[in-house]
Image (tube, rainbow, N blue to C red; front, side, top):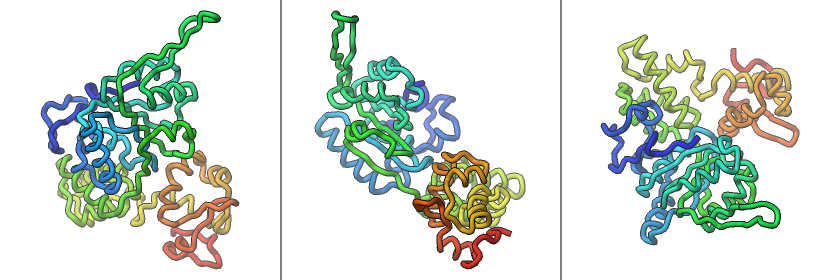
Length: 352
């Protein structure tokens, strides 16, 4: 399914984050309300924003569409939001789809034929694009043509159908899964990084202001500390602690209320949740600190191996709690120190 800017993500010409009365009722949802519309309101990814501003300005001066862009990194860091910001900053419309939704060649052909000059096409999880659709994209990205076959047998002909010049923005959590020819056709390739605690604090304060949630500076810091470096998680947690404050207190999220709410959600002060602790506990208790293979770990934890690899491991690796080795996953010396483990007996229970 294609989501056009006209239907769900209207372009806001005004450089402001205040809610625009012209936004449709559908847009008055949590995600769209808090989604930044400009680089000025997009928090984090400072180096990437600086580079993109230069590229956009250069494209405007040349009067050509922006180069195709590929964003990769863990989920929840703002790849889709950044695509919408780019469309807004270039005064372009945007169509949003995902690779699994493009099942047949005619799907990608229909999308490309419907594009307007200068429009932005955003394809999420682009590494899952099937081979035929990917090959159709090659001439479209390079020369803005579609190669189409007509007729059969000896009457078979190949036609080159021109399409409007556009900007393709691809997003993926697995850059390594992209084929080389597709990856090489992107003019700008950039990895989105995890957010710092200070950046997350700014995200939380901004979200609270938009949603009319009362939160103190210390309260925002407490939520940021447990948000795993991910804005999507921070935005989700600020709503949960707001609910807790509304029911258990006077509605104001201060440090004490935030900590109580997050403790209630089983999220500790390092951002580890029950599954994270269970994963570390299994490695420590059952496998003497590791190494242990991913499939074995997934079976012991009762989780899908892809979920562990794509959802839980990135943060644990980023923070240095576990490490990947040729033989499997191991607990790190940092985890032993931070979680008060006994070096000679790491198989003991980590959390009382």
